[in-house]
Figure 1 (cartoon, rainbow, N blue to C red):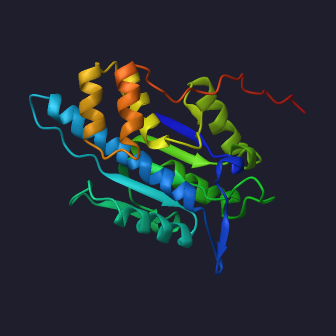
Figure 2 (cartoon, rainbow, N blue to C red):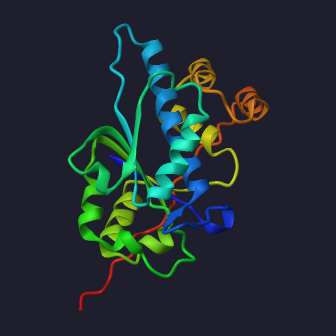
Length: 230
């Protein structure tokens, strides 16, 4: 299974040139938030299980070296990972490797007119085949849909109701609430899940839990476009 998180330039997801490479710091933060949500889920599920659960292996893939640096910089500021190693590398550097969970940061925002490295079918193949069980793709839908393979992926996520628009605020908390909602967690279980990961806005989380209003990430409701036959 996989999910696509559509990052819109209007919510701060902007690509910047770094020397001869590209980075998108907001997208790097979103990628780390996805990893943090996965780790929090694992901790919560482990605490509810009578037998120990194996720690999943997690990797973050991106086409650009500058984005690798941005993601690693963001990871270094997170304390709850402990000794857990998150593999972060470029697409080329990830060839021949697999992880249980893979997060793909595509970097390029819709203001760029070309796909760059993302137009390479071989690199697309590597990006989309590194996950054993679960994959999360973060990127600009408007830009990526220009490539037929990414268009097929977006349409698949639409059909599976796993395409989401990244909100400008509280993305990390919404990820957790969404997971808790989908797994039918009780309020007590949701509290355990939230407390296992330091939230960005504790007051926001407490208010939502007290009101039992879980601000889930709602999937984009849209019928995939079918291109006419030539």
